[in-house]
Image (tube, rainbow, N blue to C red; front, side, top):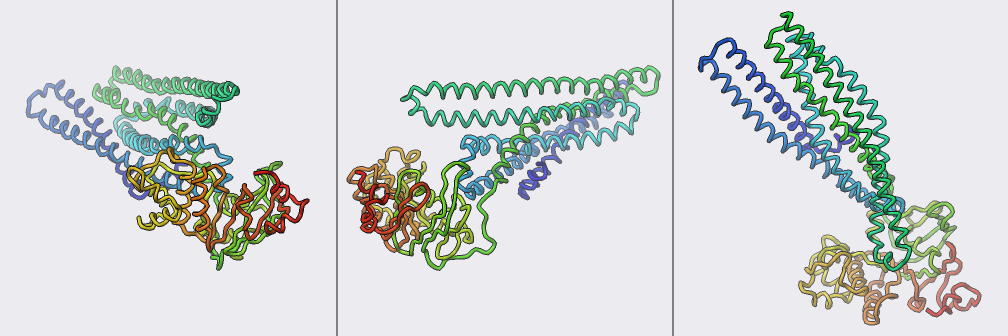
Amino acid sequence: MIKEIWEALTCNGKKSFGLSVMTFTFYAFSGIAMMYIVLKLVEIIVDGQTELANLVPYWIALGICLLVKGLSNIIADLRKHYAGFDIVLEIRKGIINRLKSFSLGFYTNERLGEISTIIHEDVDNMEMVVGHVWTRMLADFIVVVLLFVTFLILDFRMALLMISALPFAILFLILGLKKASTLEEENGNRLADMVSIFVEYVKGIPLLKAFSESKRFENKVQRSVELFGESSKKASKNKAAVLSLYDFIIDLSFWIMLFTGVILLIKGSISAYQFLFFAIISREFYKPFFALESHWLNYLSVTDSYRRIKKITQAEIIKEPDNPVFPMDYSISFENVSFSYEEGGFNMKDISFETPSHTLTALVGSSGSGKTTVTNLLLRFWDVQKGAIKIGGVDIRDMSYDELLGSISIVMQNVQLFADTVEGNIRLGKKNATHEEVVQAAKKARIHDFIMTLPQGYETVLGENGSGLSGGQKQRLSIARAFLKDAPILLLDEITSNVDPVNEALIQEAISELAKNRTVLVIAHHLSTIKNADQILVFQNGQIVQKGKHTGLLRDKNGFYYKLWNMKE
């Protein structure tokens, strides 16, 4: 973990980290030097050297040490935060870029609540360990080593007595660390469970209010809170016990040295000045060891956080080909494609069909028959388990993933809009588009006139997911994105089923224009809208049971399409 975190820092982050450690070391030594100067002043005064001229150099030295200490603290504090923010920025950038590279299956298996916890709380813990823990800890132990060498030179007996019980304390802490790691992991998992259930609960409150089953879900939320509380208490109880005993053993070292030092002082084996030096300065030596308890707690927290971060940073992504191939045209073919989401669930078997360039193919069938799975496989939200999907004769796994997604526009029933301006939402189709291109796309989507009635026109900021807009208005914004993207392949989910007649007419006009000179796959719920399709694929239980044109399919009165057609829409 330490090596991976260090390598994640940028060059500037590493420089800030190093400068912070160095200045924290100066800060600590400045404080020690001030105590040493005061002891020398006391020694001089006890020896009767009270002339002001003899004391002035010590006062000047004290002032210099105070200035160095203050400046060092300011620089160290600034630089540790730079280093901490650097690691947070790099990890978050890495996670955001990686999230785009996962299959849709990753988001099915990974809870959104847990991902949110990772991006916010767990990544923030990385700032804490780099900026607040490592910098101080390294500086402290540099000071410890140099102080111990000084103590050995001054009196090796007192120096050895000073560390007499330290090995036992550290061994005890390591043994306690082992048990605590298990408890912290359990506590972290309980937290993730609680957050995930709570997010689900909050999102479902409008629905739960309408049904009597809401009490059962409330009990589920309550139980997750109780389980997290139990694991937190267990982890805290273990921490308290281990840390209390650890502190006691370290204190034991100090009192062994002090007690023995008094005996040596009485016997005349050491001077009063040496004894006072050890008694006072040794407290600075022990400081990092007392701080080990907080370093340990931070280590436990960070280790658990880093384990969850790795669930994203080391999760399998969609593999990019070493030598990507570009298709010469945009025909689509499925060749003996088989796929299942999970064992015992939906199963698609040996799907084969071909859609020539610039044609419209409709996918029809009952809910759960495999229509949406076809589009998801084409977009590589999942990869096929058998067979191949090709665009222009090129296996989509041999295409650059960006090239694949760049060649496909999507207009679906559930439109995702962001808390951004109208123009910003349309510009998702082409980030470098000019304002004029955005306006042209909106006009083609039959949404320009409506946009101009908004308070700030294209600069009007939409609420979360386009709150305040009708379903039809959202759909036309989505169509404007597709016009702006101008991709050669178009995926459509029947988008006029839940809109008013006015919006439906505008959407049909826009879609008719959008489909021109493109290879189109449309998931159809209303069969009357796809009577003129070049090809209709009829799905049932994960298989294509019929294919052909509308009139030809209707001739087979025993066919599934005939039954669908006669079910009043």
